[in-house]
Image (cartoon, rainbow, N blue to C red):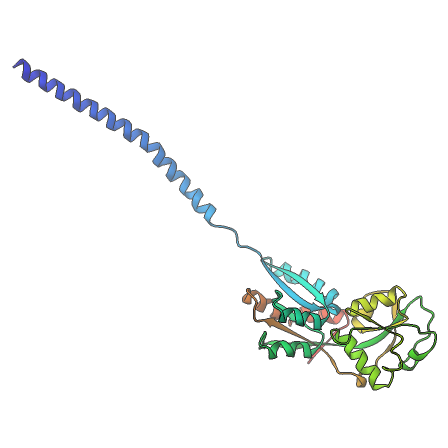
Length: 283
């Protein structure tokens, strides 16, 4: 009888000890489980990253610099998730860069031939390019210059030492200038006077600094500085019409954002800005 009671007591004590250890184990696990549950909302929140800003690269003719900088402010204020980066230069050079794989989302050229070359090589979709603007070729002189220039024939005067144009092979304004000078029989006679610039803005700088007496630039460029004045407008019959096409580069990695900008560039708001800087809108 005593053995039976003793066995019952031992069994009861063993069960009590097991329950105590079980309770401790549960108590130790609960905070950890509770902590995990508390952290899960934070984990979910950290996985929801803010949308990244998309950067578009626009290769654009140097003559569009001032207008596009103002357009950039308007576009980015309406599209805070998109940042515009510009690569300004001569249209021919920009064309070559795109052909060689340089990153670009849109191309804005100062000559239709440069856009056509990229369309022909299937680097720009013919359905996503459009002639948008026109410009005029003018001859400018320094406001402090002494040379009296009022026509093409005046370029032959002895007092005119240097005549600046853009490199005809890569700068559309230079190509138009060469074409005009050739048509009035002055290209060959003026060879000893001609100096060439890498783009139309460099030609403008040559005249501003006195490194050239006369320079051939677009009307829009002449309006950007008080240091030069228009000597005369080049007869439009002597050179190919100046047309500015815009197009989306096929290799863009941001097609939706590129289309958004492409459409914005054709809006009335944007065209009004171009007109303000001296461009004309193609009908």
